[in-house]
Amino acid sequence: MIKLVQAEFIKIFKRLNVWVLLFLLLFFLNIPTLIAIFGKFQNPGNYYLPQIFTTQLSQSATTSSLMAILVVILCVSSIGGEYGWGTLRTVLVRGTPRREFLAAKFVATLCVLVLWYVALLLVSLPLGWVVMLKVKQEISWSFLSISGLTTLLERTARAYFTVVPAVVLGFFWTALGRSLGVGMGAAMVHIVVADPLMFGLLRGLGGIWAEIPRYTMVGLGRSVVTFGANPVLERLLDPWVAAMLLLGYIVIFGFLAFRIFQKSDIRFTAA
Image (tube, rainbow, N blue to C red; front, top):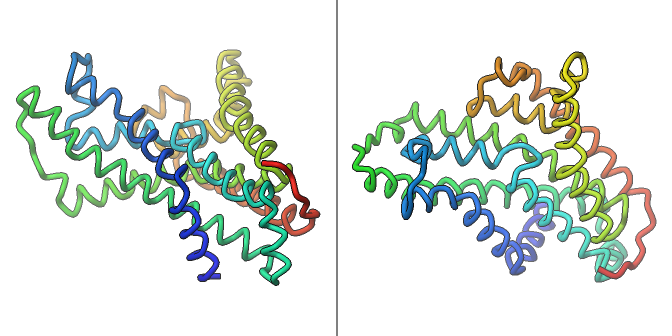
């Protein structure tokens, strides 16, 4: 299993797309920060240190965030490419257990997601510092204390957790469709269109319908990442309850992905 994960890391970091996706993530999430530095921004305080970390984590949480969309592209291309190039059949014929093969890809993708969050926070540090220099705000480095770093770690973990369902959905739809194209299309429709659309439409109806969106992946993610919102105004669930329900989604779709991958025929499909 360890060797499979190591081999997957080698394949992932040799691909150009993982670096392109990371660049797109850092660029688009930091556009408001760059505006605050080089132009005029209405709320520059959101990009002061350490507030910039909370702002960035809020923007990169839940299954409909840019972080989730890009990591879905990564994980779908990881397994979908194996179908498309026909290498999956070759690997399995050599005796690699299907469960271990898929688990290695899942673990490797989650590790890459960790690195992406670390990169986002590291880039946010100098950018927040420059924003404060521009507005001539005194910088307090108290957030580098043990308590400050613990809070940052906790918020990062919460944001990270809300993106994991997107990774699971990516593997689920790719295993179900047995191709990169079907997996990419279905996963994107699920996390970018269906779930957010249900969340928005039902909230707009009011009444009992407004209670349902809290149990979608988007709604549960927002409940977990309450450090960026007022849970009373947003009508969110308790963070721990939401985390347990979100874990249920992860377990269900993860189990289905593994079962489908183990039972389905492996065929060659054009990428």
